[in-house]
Length: 204
Image (cartoon, rainbow, N blue to C red; front, side, top):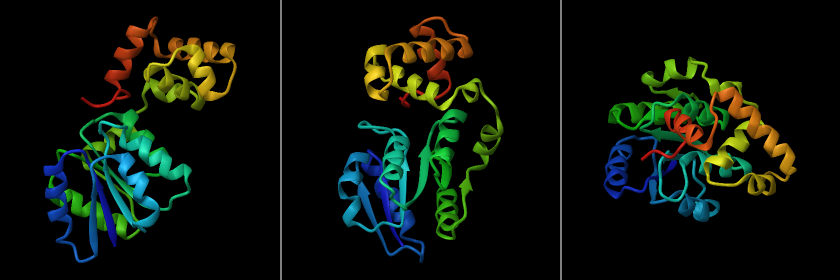
């Protein structure tokens, strides 16, 4: 099994690499300091598994996972995250992530996740299981409303969101009004605070 570790902290990558090489199932481990580096090299690597951090400078682990999925890449993925956010965890599951591991967890937990995924099983850190079972206000949003919300949180104006999603200005404005009503917020400041509380903003 060939594994890639994607994390912007070199010391963490080195420690994880040493840990993973103790597994007999693993033939080689490659490292990347960013998700974009992984995407640039992915085609020639023939990877079996990617262990990727959620929070990185260039883009989130979920954005990289989505791009791999859109490219039809069959590689298995384990997401490491320090955030106990049901929104992040549920989005990861919707993208087909095979393992969800708490970054503050033990090395043994990482090894358990890798072994499980190698055997075509899913793995979830125990502390995340109850969060995934919870229903939050974000679950009431439609797929399009979530797309509009994420585009707004990335700093795009209504007109810019319209261009990004290839829909009319009026349609975006309607989605924006409805999602703010559902979330119980009245302005961008309240929307940003709600997003931070629910883990939709990048981890700091």
